[in-house]
Length: 187
Image (tube, rainbow, N blue to C red; front, side):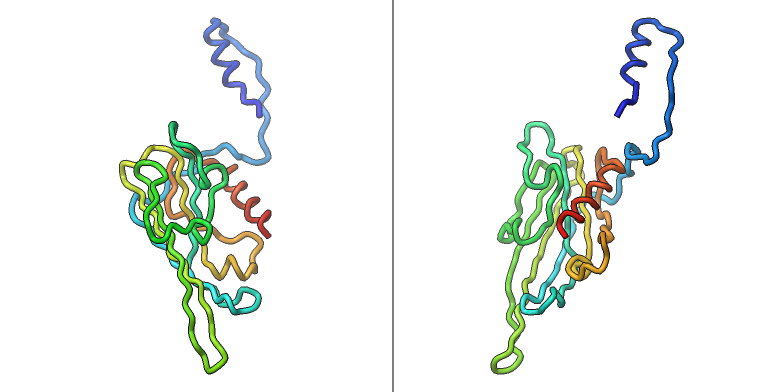
């Protein structure tokens, strides 16, 4: 992408008063900033999945998706670059894990069995996750989204309707596009 702002700055430094420029309108504005949303606090998510059902029927609750940009000095992790779901692979056994000062998360997984007769039973996978964002967190990019488990696992919609719970930092329209492309690559 060519914006020309560096050329304008250098021209000003060199004392150039007039500068010719050609301005093109973009078909899509990917550079506009997305406004911050939500307030720091404690966010809880709970979802359940019937592991014995066919076609992933029997899912409910909400799932969380966390995408960050670690501050300088912190080694980037799973939530940097493209983000990650707060589910089974991120299981912390119910203990908080600090990503950087002011941002912690925890995920706990349990299986529940419901007997339905002598030979029949239902098995449920329950995912509980929590994100704690302190008001004095490191001022970097944090984007916490939620979506219903039913919408994810029913696959009725091409791209699920993610709802922003908390967003802070320099997020742009291109990140929304990356989020939907990430989803399309999964399925």
